[in-house]
Length: 460
Image: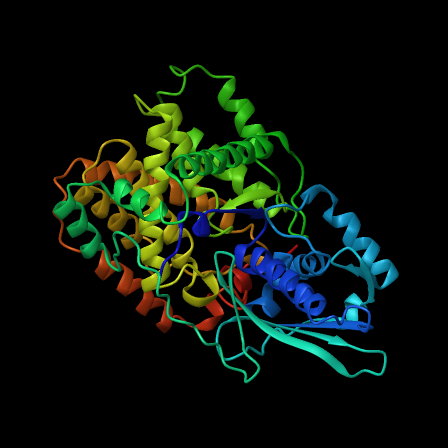
């Protein structure tokens, strides 16, 4: 399976890659399918059914909003988040949307956008069916999509099958396990970042890759600054207060000597970076899936830690960080899952923690063996982590969970760099364990808000 770094790290909007980014892309594709079939002038009404986790927590995750924007032709990396609420309100008030921003189509949002809280489709927990009707109520076009995590989507064929076509792409350095990756590094005397760079050059030039990575880093830095700038209450009804702005004021009012004791110093800043990103995500702002929106704060927070607190930090280190983190992310994507609806939050925060730990170890000079160890530690101590968002919102416990995951990632890298890379449990075994744990996990703990904190905390 050939996946690029730029498939894992995508610019989008909050609050969820599987519930917002994926459905917006799917709806956009559906709209273009209608156009390609020359049906746009015949469509009178649209209907969308959301199943599984999309149905159970889609309202809190902004799935309906994302679908409406996708139908109007928007894509996550290009949409202006600031105007979304006004546009959705106009659609709801008029019962009309502009398909691909050109063709007025009727849609009664309350009746035609249906959240099936219990039912799910067979292939994946995040399923959605879109149907276009003519004036007589006849079906003109229908499509079923699945949002499989991290903004990735797949579509059923006309026979109701999801055929995953074997990827025949042959990259210079193929690997499907951490063991294979480490062997490639040894045999070719290359770092993990260098192996990934050679593979990425299949799609882009080295200069394009570096500029693309630095562009993603720029979006992450902007997200932190936006999170620090915004104050108030997050949307959704839980009345969760944004904390990043006040924490920033508190930290900048102190000297570094003030923070030696009893504060954790640099860790306070890491908490700030993670909280800022995930508050922006919860508010529907622009973020980078890393590898998902629900875990979007961990890699930016650890990167900021590298940039601000690690001696000799530089852009080349940032590039190595991303390339290495992507290599680890690909292993989770291929051999387990990065979808909270499929394996719980261990697939999101756990994967991001492992990726960030590996990236930090690489940027600070770790060997391939130490990097693999850092990733293994990062995931091992997130095994079994459930996804139980209160009210179906990516707020509690998600925002603080990113801060905790960031601290874990830094500590994982530190522990690995203190060793020689040899350790008892391999990353491959931890990934396999995460996959098996996710399969065994009860569905109520997998982004449905029907278990854990979601039912044991009274909503006010």
